[in-house]
Amino acid sequence: MASEHRWAEPAVRRERLVPNLEQMIAPNDPVRLFEEILAGLDWSDWEALYKRNGLGQPPIHPRIIAAAILYGMYRGIRSSRKLEEACCYRFDFMWLVECRRIDYSTFAKFRTRFHAPLKDLFRQIGRTAMKMGLVRLCEVAFDGTRVKANNSRYNTRTAKTLEQKLQALDELFEQLTAQTQATDDQQADQGSSTRLPDELADLEQRRQRLAEALAQAKAADEVRRQQGVDPAKNPAQVPLADPDSRVMPNKEGGYAPNYTPTAITDGHSGFIVDCDVLAQVNESDALAESVDRIAENFGQKPEKMLTDAGNNSGQNMAAMQQRGIEFYAPAESQQPQPGNPAWREDPRQAVPESEWPKLPRNDKGRLDKSCFVYDAAADQYYCPQGQPLSYEQTKKERRGERQYVRRVYRCAHCTGCPLASACLAANSKRGRTINRDQHEALREQTAARMAEPAARAIYNQRPRIAETTFGILKSVMGLRQFLLRGLEKVQTEWRWATTAFNIVKLVRAIARLRAECVPIVRTS
Image 1: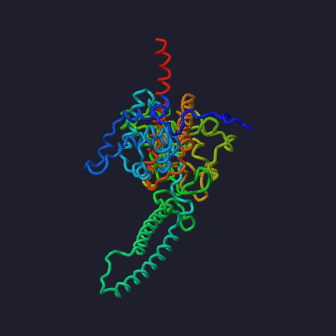
Image 2: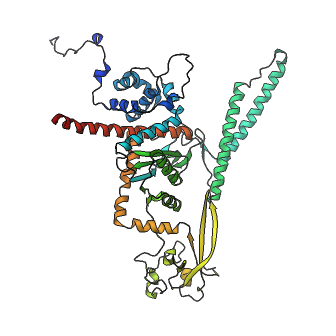
Image 3: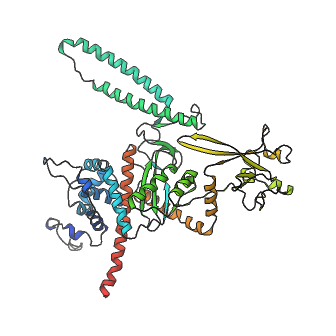
């Protein structure tokens, strides 16, 4: 028979245990540094949003609730209910909030209430990192990613479907209104309510939401029409649960309502120095504004900007040049390059006939623009036969919100040219033309810079700087889908995540510095 004393006895009986949170949290636990960093920041903007009427129980200081939200993101806890549970049962959270009972509704309201003060908190942490030498703004990388909106991929509608639904609701609303009016007439002597019945009020709200979605769908269809897409064959889909989001390609495949979060990451220690969320597919238009916010928040502009091919527009090149920032992105010059028979020392000399088959063609099968050499001093092009294409006129056109300026150059020597059949369209009557937009020179300069080995070495750091940030935010913090709806709330949620990301960086940097200082103190 087994002995009664076979099993180990508890160190302390449950009924005798007096919990001491200070002893339960190790001296080097990250939660202590979290609290230390946040306690050293200025919270006056947060405090100013609280009413001071002296009624009710004193509020919990905003630093405590913010600390729980930020620390929760560090631990992969984003849900308000999960945060409430953690504050009740996890020792690190209990230590952080000092055993305060914070319910989920408080967390939910708090995370959307302090949109402006959160920006200042993000700025304070960035400046602290800069004072410690962790942010240097020598090389920064700009990039965007895709995060799902809080909207089912199937809960989207086209303008045609919305019109049908709105028409059905209008008919139902009229029927219920007639029934309500008839009931009111029968009860006229008893007095009728001036408030709209609940069923009609609900229908009215649904009608308003559908009308707003219909207007948005029609506007999106008009944009598609301007871009050359037929809305009748390929209509725009409008999300109904989160109308601010847009149907975009998913990273995992397929299409769904998404947002496009952006971030600029410092190359030295990987701190995020600016962030935003866009309700559009391409983040290219946000680069210049993002750089301006960095200069405002840190009092210093980045020296080098690294970004991918999706953001190498001429507008961005011009914006970085105006701000004195070196721009590093894949760029192709449309001037002849070595290996192209059109590349020659004297463009006035004709390309040998034996090299004509090697001249590059465009997608229409005619000689490509890279067969024509531009002479900046004379402001004219030279064709493969060495004939000049002189400036003829300037054309302006608007695509969306952008205005493009193109200088047109035309050749006056195409008649009888042996390359005319390969150069001109069949219905051409006036000679070959070449267009040069206002950013052509910048693209050529960027392409020349990127061809240098030193520039390629700098640009090769871009994936490490930019992609690592999104990998941690999505895989470690679990931010693959937003919890909130509406662009402003989503922007706030993204800023909470990037602020937590930076605090984690700061916690690890301080912990590493203190660990390095311990041997020095012991040996001194």
